[in-house]
Picture 1 (cartoon, rainbow, N blue to C red):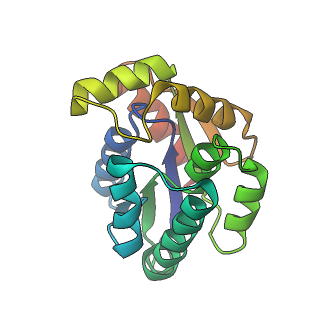
Picture 2: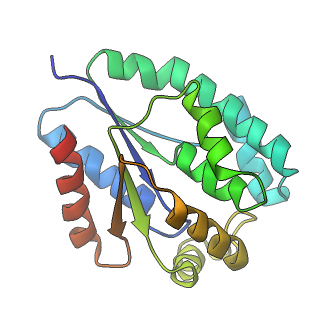
Length: 196
């Protein structure tokens, strides 16, 4: 049985995470791997509550962080670890690096957020961090959704991008997400197959 693996696809809103995660899942499945494609926040009770705040207004930073941690603990326990244990490649569209960036951009300590997650969440085999200019990210969000939500405003994304830029961990591979989708996908595949 092939060993299980965890791949996180990260970046600010509009960087192309969901598209690249889906393309990666399809490509690995075509190579014969069992693939579990998932996302955070999840579709569980806590994850839905977080998603609701994207429309209604964000919570205070510590309260928001607590919800992300609670949602992730359940995600790790119920889906990520069991899938990896049976040999699947788990691809997660956003993981704790996004929490460090988005909650860190609101004044919390990104390094502390990472450490709190490392207490229970497995470190990915590779983190694909898609980079894009925040203004281009907002433009993509607007063309996709018509309007940005409370997590997708330009000033917030500028601060998030700066936290992402400062994250230095060995599992992170930065890929220019502003290029054509197929070129980005080729680099994503190269980064992932190198560690699998």
